[in-house]
Amino acid sequence: MITLNQVIAGYTPGIDILQGISLTVAEAEIVTLLGPNGCGKSTLLKCIAGFLSPRSGSVEINGQDTSNIPIHRKIRECGLGFVPQLDNVFNNLTIAENLQTGGQFLPPAQRRRRMAELADQYPLLRKKWRAPASALSGGERQILALTRALMPNPSVLLLDEPSAGLSPKMLLEVFSAIQTIRRQDKVTILMVEQNAMEALHISDRAWVLALGKVAMSGKAQDLLNDPRMRELYFGGRAA
Ligand SMILES: Nc1ncnc2c1ncn2[C@@H]1O[C@H](COP(=O)(O)OP(=O)(O)O)[C@@H](O)[C@H]1O
Ligand SMILES: [Mg+2]
Image (cartoon, rainbow, N blue to C red; front, side, top):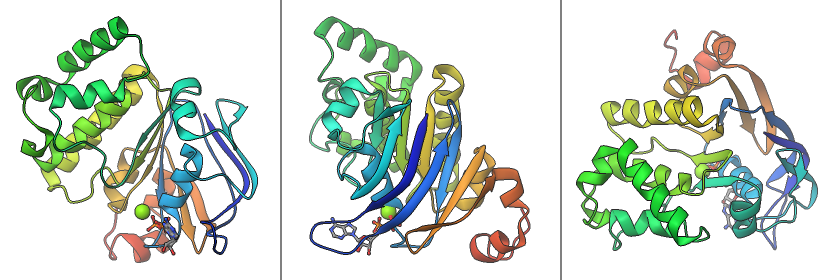
């Protein structure tokens, strides 16, 4: 579960990018964060992840105030998993080594067990186990980034544009993996997406940001039918 209370945040030195954001993601929900380029979506995820401390307000993960806890401790102690928008795998490391780095805090035996589990769940990773990540397709790389974040069994997962640059077929595969993660492991998922319609189809709810504030929010199904959303995000297409 994620709860943001009136979060104000920005980069030092600089203006407030997030100007008082309150939102929630309930346990085992998939929630999408939408909004135009530069409105602060990635900043919001970085703030929840602990790359950035809020200037005021609070960020709670599973009921604990984590506002000033840095990312490495959130991953270790608060059940956080984070897949950033860019540079989310190590290109020069193999698939196996990438997973290993995702579980660097785990005791070695547990780490090996978890790597074997993920290799069973994602056969495409096992197939290229000893290949460098640079040899993967865009979709495979995104699956690797996801599984790398899953190594410590997080309860909360933040995904920044998981479908960026993917073909429609690979998008479906990545979204299907996201649904499976929620269903099997009851993970709470907050994802930023540009493919609004596709993302809403696998989401329970969504929040729309504009200029650092929440502009709209609601059930995914209601937003899919909202004429304002149709105009802004679906290019006039009916959902
Ligand atoms: N590391 C940074 N340092 C300073 N400003 C930044 C940094 N990252 C992003 N910004 C600024 O914060 C604003 C929001 O960016 P971002 O959160 O990346 O938007 P979005 O993900 O919605 O496209 C933009 O004006 C951007 O230029
Ligand atoms: Mg972004």
